[in-house]
Image 1 (cartoon, rainbow, N blue to C red):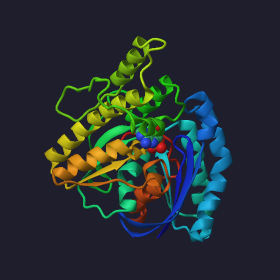
Image 2: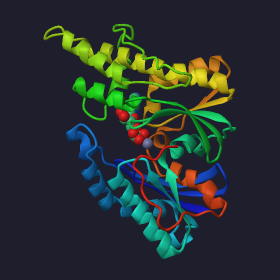
Image 3: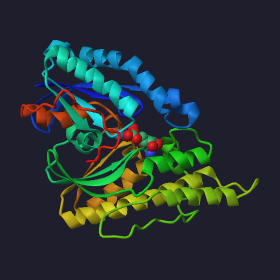
Image 4: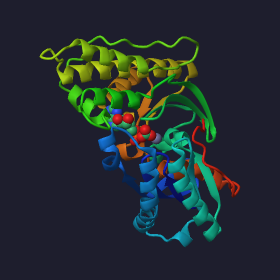
Length: 335
Ligand code: KG4
Ligand code: ZN
């Protein structure tokens, strides 16, 4: 089956062509992403109206490019998978309306996909992973730990009570005058910094679950910056390294506890923050030390892409399922 995936939930317009015959096993024939970083950079964050306007301009060329790279035409496509939430509603609607138009014109089945399910399944694009496995999804919009029990069956074991981890990276980078998005810059700066220079608090969330919290550390960094007046500014590399170490600690603790509690063999790390070198290094070291296997997709499948959306739609399309024509975008869809 050839599946066209379409993703436009935030500031990336993406399309991909996936070839699959078995749920969870697929060959990515193409994966194209039109990134809007240059559009939103000067505002220090994503401006929703601009995001949807740029999606309107880019979605068709992105789909055409995905088909061309895959060496097929629209008539070869057997089914379409599109992100229907969560995300910015104006952005979601662009991809969804485009997908509906194509599905109706071509008379092919359409399924709406939860964006987070895409992130959870993304590791399967490149790795054989035995189910059940644990997925730590960390991006600019989400931080959560899921137990993948089957295709379509996910148990959310914990999530952030406030900011997402990526949001904390971006906000701290903004405070430090490092621009947007800031995760990559902090990661690079931290390589030469002292991780113990500032002892930022590690938030503990009460309860039996594996919830996290990243708003306090943002305030702690702001207070540290405020206390260090002119001429007494902390070295950016030390601040970046100490902040990053605290975030990594707060992600690792619940992830490791959940992996032990649920007896999984594999921990998958996904989402934009999965690109973080220290997070990869420490999770791999600590988890492998306890006998877990750690897998992380390559960067192009960690960040938003349509290959993961096609994969998340594929097991339903393979079963012959389709969504009704009135399927709608949902800004606050949960998994
Ligand atoms: O998955 P993604 O592309 O988009 C969302 O769905 O949010 O993730 C983007 C997030 C941003 O917050 C960005 O700062 C963060 O991922 N990020 C990083 C790194 N590279 C990207 N955070 C920490 N370290 C990195 N190397
Ligand atoms: Zn995402």
